[in-house]
Amino acid sequence: MTVPTSSELRIPADPAFIVVAKRAAAGFGCVAGFDVESVDDLVIAVAQATENAIEAAVRNSGRGGGQVRLSFRLEERRLEIQVRSLCGRGEDAGECAEQPVQATTAMAAPAQVAAVSADAAAAHDLALRVMGLFVDDYRYRVDQRTGGLRVRLTKYRVG
Image 1 (cartoon, one colour):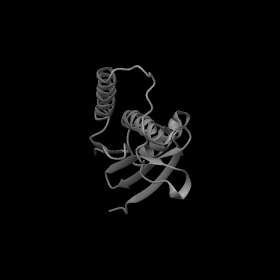
Image 2 (cartoon, rainbow, N blue to C red):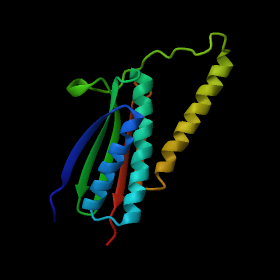
Image 3 (cartoon, rainbow, N blue to C red):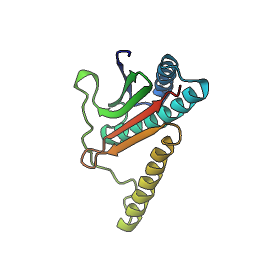
Image 4 (cartoon, rainbow, N blue to C red):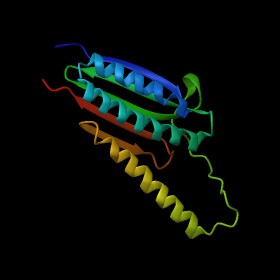
């Protein structure tokens, strides 16, 4: 039995850094012994999780203020990746605190705003569910109080 290996990566809440998360996931997938197709699936799921975490961090801390933390845990036949949105920079980055949402249209009716919010929530939920197609187990949670996102992806190695 091998000793579990853990590592962590923090990236700015900037879509340009999704490629960094994808490379890290591919590297861990290779070290875990996954075949090429499984590594590709893992990369797709991590990219989707990271994109959504970046959106949550930007939404709650503004552009350039948030981070995304990816935690990798490699065990005997499984790789678990956790993706979490964080606010702030450096060591003091913590859970995102909810920021007031500024209306983009001064004359928007409450029903229109609610419809746009419901559509955005449905699209976000669908995007997160799509991740499940590429991994063996996944869970996600959006903290209603803070707006922070936590995603856990698990991929098992067969054989």
